[in-house]
Amino acid sequence: MTQVAEPGSAAGATSTHGAGQGTLGAVHHWIGGRIVEGTSGRRGPVFDPATGRIAREVDFATTDEVAAAVAAAKAAFPAWRASSLSKRTDILFKIRNLVESRRTELAAHLTAEHGKVPSDALGEIARGIENLEFACSIPNLLKGGFTEQASTGVDVFQIRQPLGVVAGITPFNFPAMVPMWMFATAIATGNTFILKPSEKDPSASMFLAELLHEAGVPDGVFNVVHGDKVAVDAILEHPDVAAVSFVGSTPIARYIYETGTKNGKRVQALGGAKNHMIVLPDADIDMAADAAISAGYGSAGERCMAIATIVAVGDVADPLVAAITKRLPQVKIGPGSDPQAEMGPLVTRQHRDKVASYLDSSAAQGATVVADGREHPLFKDSDGFFLGVSLIDHVSTEMDAYKDEIFGPVLTVVRVPTYEAAVGLVNDNPYGNGTAIFTRDGGAARQFQFEVLAGMVGINVPIPVPVAYYSFGGWKSSLFGDLHMYGPEGIQFYTRAKIVTQRWPDPGTSKIDLGFPRTR
Ligand code: NAD
Image (cartoon, rainbow, N blue to C red; front, side, top):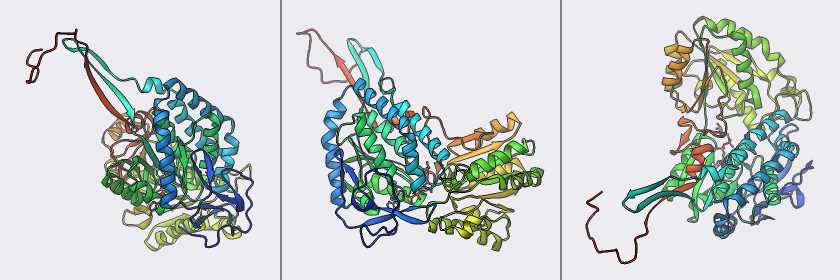
């Protein structure tokens, strides 16, 4: 993470976005229902990826500032958990409606700092809103079981109660949706929440904080601290943080899981991905090619559910690669201010250059570069972090472009002879987030769904992100922990069960009995 030596030195700041910003265009923290300026003197640059300029800076929290947020959340917890479910539902409806009515402003923050084009930003927000809508049904979701007459005159029932202060640590690629995956369910179930968003695009979280405030979320129930490893470690080590949800890259997810659980916290840590799309010889080639383009280059490939690897089975490879190649010029690349643009820049220059480096390593390792995104005029002539769409054929499993998560607009094609070889590739891969199969054969699709080792499976659907009333999560190195995120498993993650066994004997009928119950 880059640090900026001189706070406020963001020459060329162009922000018109007010979210959480104080003097000098800096993004501050949100603690206890108000903006709190950082005191560390450490800040990170926030770029406008379309121009390559630093647009503003973001405060990096100290351990004490994180502790202040935890204290605010802890103080707010007793009243919030005691608030009625109908009151919480009312507030969640208001949050949902505010996010919906202010979605264009929220989308502008995403475009300004992440670089994704407005249509994609609005799609991200729509998927986040689904999580708020799911959380609006919290009275129904928290219904427990009740057993009458478990023993004579004895009833047993289960209630689910919140954990207390919980934290969410989120990645740069979904600065609005992933926080909504977490906080919608966390606060609906009665917890208070601390968000540590990505330092690369922090303004969306401050805008959300203001909307939650406007919706009537009490002070301290939702807090935002910005920063780097210092802030993350302060969360992981604070004794009053009961649970941590994380979404990001696999090495950091593993670290969060190991450190958080060692410190006695409940942790769900979602990691990186390498999603394969298998195309069988009987597939509709045009449909598969359209899907590959959409899922490979949407959001400049910076989606954890993006298709990275196309596995072409048998003789489908040549026509499939030809159909994808034919479509490449149709992808309109440009800044979010261009209404025609379908794909924006990458998030930082450093990341863009790393993504582009796979084109050279693939060629050196024997693959065929069919399309090189560095030939796009915006790569050559713009200061923005643009890269054109790239396609690499004849990739094999020893190549870096296959082994690494590239996280950019680079589609790779691996050619295999059989369905068995294709499934073997997916199952041997260390990641297991999403995968897809394209075929007209229902039997093959069912076999694939049965045996593939991945958490989310698409059948003629390239990006099978579950709707909000299911839960989201990968397998293998794509998730550390037991429970997937949002949906029913999110409710489980943010609550703990309490089982009550009760009886109401008539006065005078009790007696001493040191044994276990012997009669039924
Ligand atoms: P990242 O792991 O670099 O950062 C994620 C979060 O961790 C950020 O808040 C960051 O500040 C923090 N962080 C970074 N380095 C840290 C360190 N050394 N110690 C403590 N905290 C640290 O991820 P990213 O680059 O922001 O996001 C892209 C990654 O996220 C990709 O790997 C992508 O696949 C993954 N992702 C996964 C999912 C999923 O659901 N599985 C969803 C979205 C993104």
